[in-house]
Image (cartoon, rainbow, N blue to C red):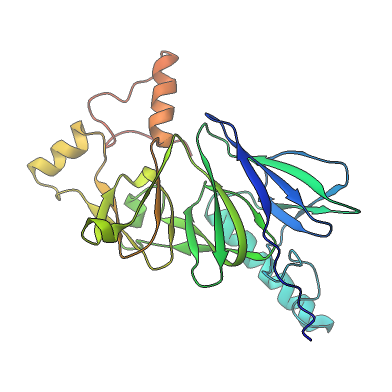
Length: 279
């Protein structure tokens, strides 16, 4: 018989309305990890450990011993950790993960996103990866591998959110969060292609082709869209057959609304063309 234990589905419940959170029940020895800053609470029998290394996808949560024995294995592990840290720094994300493991019985841990909105649990069965925009990830099982992917490289720098994506592979549950409400679409139901505000893309399945295109070029109508339409000069394009999750509220729109409510700078008629983003 194989010594590999069958995967046990993560027991989780998403609760709340305007600001949802995920309550996860862990079996003894079961581990989940989250991005630093997404943790809410835990029971006392759940241990918490902060690491620079990402999950390996084999259920060990990135612990030592995966790259073989001796100095060679340690060197490969160190190089892998350094690469992961560098990728996350490039993506503007936290450099560390927090791992939670239940000891001596079942335990509970809670997570949440950072903006008012929905959460969603995605189930990976090993056949398709999921890609998420860089602020969507909340938590995942240690059997799920985390990586950084790049999409729309040709025009991605003008595409804003979504140029740097987070990639999840393996088996298990990934929990994501977004702003406002979610809507699920399949480009195949709309002729195979949809065009979306770059800030509205939350996540999509492997098999969906992501790109960034300019709106109408630098002609009169294109400039009208950019200057007075508030959309900037680019839209995200999603093509293929697979699930796409969009959010109804963009971070930029929320920031502009808060500025207006506080009597600060308004976006004005120039829309997204000349608006500035926080560093």
